Length: 224
Image 1 (cartoon, rainbow, N blue to C red):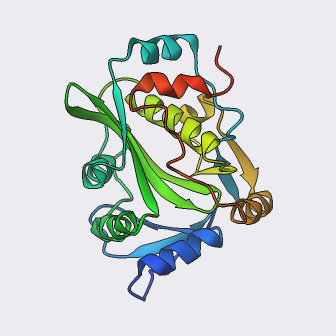
Image 2 (cartoon, rainbow, N blue to C red; image 1 turned 60 degrees about the vertical axis):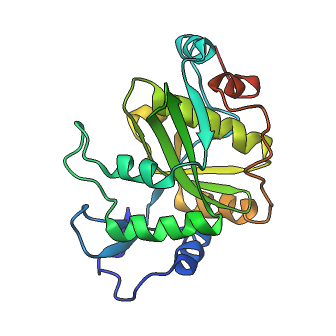
């Protein structure tokens, strides 16, 4: 991937972050303890096609049991701090205190959003990302219970489809995202899709199907 290796010398602002996303780049930190950020512009960009998200029969059955409640934008700090926690499959996180501070400001400005999965009053999974125009830039997700992050992603895809979005950027592709339909595309193709998506005015709140996970099943595509 293409990376600006030199640490960012200037103090980043929310406006700088939004401009960076609109130009196809995003900031990361080496670890939670790192004091510097750097720009990333991958040669191959991960995206989740909004007409290609895959939900298995077992996942569909789990969501219909309605053990989970899906909420949007109710507890940003809880979501991002859970995303920043070290996980069993990773020694480090790229979310440091500056990232948390910047994206919290973006949340208060209305650009950053969370999809949260709750069960019995406990936050058990979720994700956060940035919405600009008709593009949503997924940043990170977590789960404390099996499949909770999948439910969050399913709800996000449904919400973006209903809201008229055209691009769901996942930055990179993991085996988990690939199993759900995620793909990699060349940087040039990504920038073209981004350019077209930014011309659209997506509505993140258009989905009015209710707060439970059952609502995700109404328009998510390619269920088997």
